[in-house]
Amino acid sequence: MYNILIVKYGEIGVKGKNRYLFENKLIKNIRNMIKHIGEFNVYKEYGRIYVDIEDYNYEEVIEEVRKVFGVVGVCPAIKAEKSYDKLKEIALIMLEKNIEEGCKTFKVESRRGDKEFPMTSQEMSVDIGAYLLKNLDGKIKVDVRNPEVKISCEYREHHTMVYSKTIKGYGGLPVGTNGKALSLLSGGIDSPVASWMVAKRGMKLEFVHFHSYPFTNERSQEKVLDLAKIIAKYCGKIKLHKVNILEIQKAISENCHESDYTIVARRFMMRIANKLAKETNCDALVTGESIGQVASQTIHGLTCTNAVVDIPVFRPLIAMDKLDIIDISQNIGTYETSIIPEEDCCSLFAPKNPTTRPTIEKMNLAETKLDIDKLVDEAIEGRESFYVEFE
Image 1 (cartoon, rainbow, N blue to C red):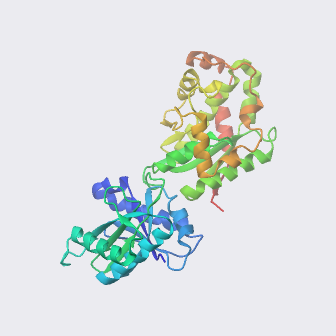
Image 2 (tube, rainbow, N blue to C red; image 1 turned 90 degrees about the vertical axis):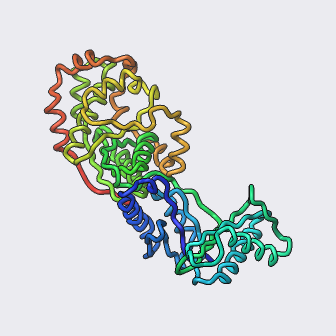
Image 3 (cartoon, rainbow, N blue to C red; image 1 turned 30 degrees about the horizontal axis):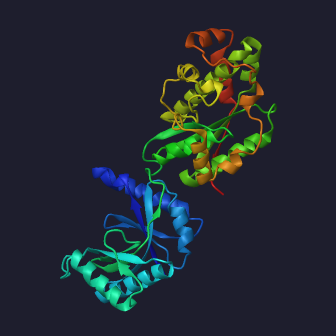
């Protein structure tokens, strides 16, 4: 029935003279998202983006297109030759389908793209509505204020188009239009969600994952790889850096008070991420921290970790409740992987009674016996880096 998708975008429409850059990026990202289904003609026309779906399963294609950041809605439509009579016939077919699905009231909304057509848009709506009522013999009623379905009819310069549904997208901005960030990716619930949320605002991502192999097993690293692949579904190919911090953790345990282990280790992770971000031309760091969720995420702990970096740190989950974060993780497909029980580097040297009110002065003092630069440089030099794609 449907032969084309109308892709609607939101914020891109107010980008002024730069709008075409966002539109072109969005078209490229849509093509990448659906390339595993087949070859599609994705193009821009009349300030809109279209996808010709031909004989493909339109529902499958819509499900993929709606996940592309920047897309606020996808409308399955019927495109036909330029004929007003044909337009009315298609509108009738569309409304009959909605009646079969249980709709009781409707409204016609028309758009005259060809200014030489003698009717105004309003006159078209009245005329098409009358035609539909005449041919449906009381099966449905008109409700212009609160209809169950809107039949949208467009009479363009070269074709006609009819649609009635809009499937909601994630919105945001196309990935790659807002700089690049390095996200600290663990195997938990939070950091994949934080990464997804920042990517939704148009930022291209790279990942850094900290591990303590062989004290932690390889399965924990495989879990993180699986999470990275899921996020890559939305973002495209992503570079992942795996950094072993076992030697750093050993040095901390030998030279620092047990209650300070977590904060000191976290400060090392932030130092490594900060330096790695600069090497990879990333403009910011991303973490999955939320105020008070764990001992190291008190305002005092976050202040201490912030003190060792000199680029912005984005924390999109900072004021979110855990249940809200879980809802997003389930929606984007990371939850089932995140809850697989595997020991990570943070739990390896976790103190029984971690400090919850650290100060920068105290943490600086706690680190005096550590050769910070040497430990950071060695960890970065020993990293593994490779690209991850959705499979």
